[in-house]
Image 1 (spheres, rainbow, N blue to C red):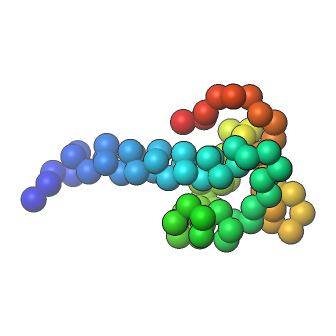
Image 2 (image 1 turned 90 degrees about the horizontal axis):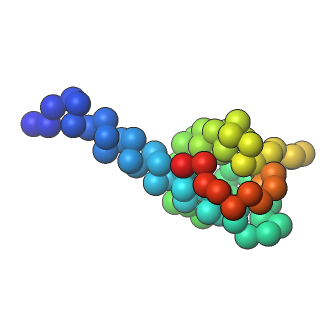
Length: 81
């Protein structure tokens, strides 16, 4: 049985990996995706993907437009992860 403190780094790593997968979807110029589109493309649950995309909005990497479409704010060349 794993101790509780051993699972936290694994969970953190998985979240970071998922965040990078979502972020990478928006590296192509002109990428415009809904949460459902991004979830399907990244292989994530839509609720998880939505939370990750909201994190990217809060970090200034994405912005949400009309009808739930997300776009990259402006290329900076740096990752937020």
